[in-house]
Amino acid sequence: MKNAIKYITGKTLQPLVGAYLSRERTYNYKGISLRIPPQVFHPAFFFSTKFLLQFIEGLQISQKRFLELGAGSGLIAFSAAKKGAIVTATDINSIAVEFLHKNQQRNNVALQVIKSDLFSDIPQQQFDIVAINPPYYKKSPVTDADYAWYCGENSGYFINLFKTIGGYLGKSSEVYMILNDECDLKLIMSIAAQFNYRLALMSSKRKAWEMNYIFKIEKMQQHV
Figure 1 (cartoon, rainbow, N blue to C red):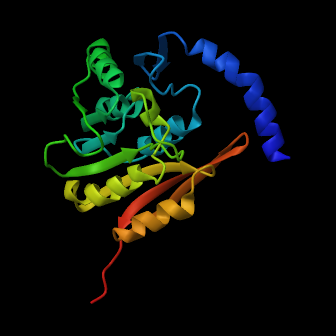
Figure 2 (cartoon, rainbow, N blue to C red):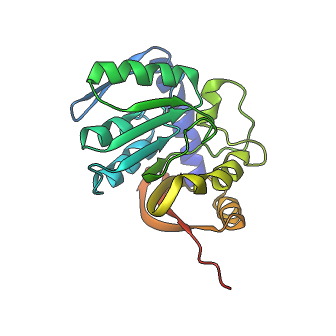
């Protein structure tokens, strides 16, 4: 029944949302004003960004080195910067990066913007807090915009994520990632475990037919 409702609702709303998002739009949130192009994930229509943002807003982030990995619109990054964090926002999508720069000027907010495929072009450093809203559909991305949705046929995004993230974390670093029940959660957890990480559930919330989960990525203790 849930799948039937989801299918019918999706078929009804998708054309309307698609038509609205086919043009550059303005999105406002708590004094932040963002111009969002069609090629970038729009936070007004996807609950995951807002849910992760609300969670991050509850953390002590002032003067913390904060990374939004795969920032898209950059809403979380801009919110963190306004709360006093030292922010880096990255994305693989060239258009997303262009608009991160434009919105930085629009909001007069200090943050570093980097075009990067995961950590490949981020200068070596340690972040205190990392926020990730990852792609998770098993399909190979073709266009820049696809990288917001697709993690590769073999979930290569998560393999590369867990393979490289350790070089950017200190002993007290915190990493938060949002996923939902459309993900292959068992596979993602299995990939994390291969690199000695575990996903600790911090919060969950249902929105319509979709259950969303915020996980803290933790290093597992190695037993000698």
